[in-house]
Image 1 (tube, rainbow, N blue to C red):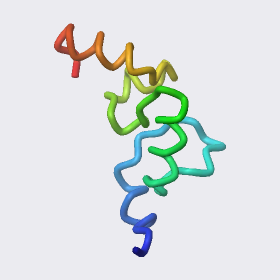
Image 2: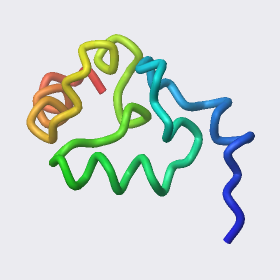
Image 3: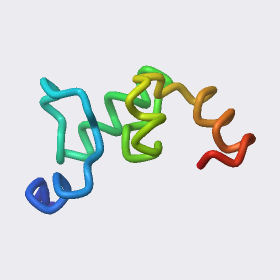
Length: 67
């Protein structure tokens, strides 16, 4: 399967500038799930900027209707 990095990068909201996985969703998801996290695209821009991408943070945001 061919990576669609050029298309993916247009909606990637990751604010971590030195990230080598921007636009390479398969690598990003694999990296974050290993760390019990979700990738930036699962969060609003404000929530993403906290760099707390934990499952628990995501669950709190959903519970509080912030996602």
